[in-house]
Length: 113
Image 1 (cartoon, rainbow, N blue to C red):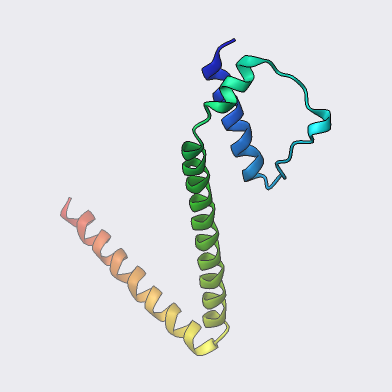
Image 2 (image 1 turned 60 degrees about the horizontal axis):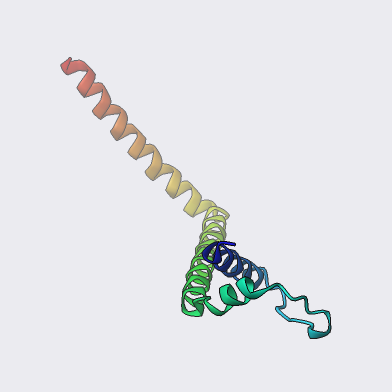
């Protein structure tokens, strides 16, 4: 058996179980003897690496949740702004002015050609 492959598989399984929120318990009455290679692989697990990987995954998930909350909040703010007729009309006016300026700029470039 390849001890390094077993060690990596055990580390990956442990990370997956923790990431999924599964409980990690061993029922010793149902314990199976996996042999010396499995015990050696388990003993060689670098729990600092496991911890670092879990930390990385949690940071990514936390960042994604923060971004999603910000996007939701911004959507609500825009919805509230657009529900005010005066603000909505002012925004439309500004957008029309911007579109007109861009259109004039494009026309000017086409005339130069």
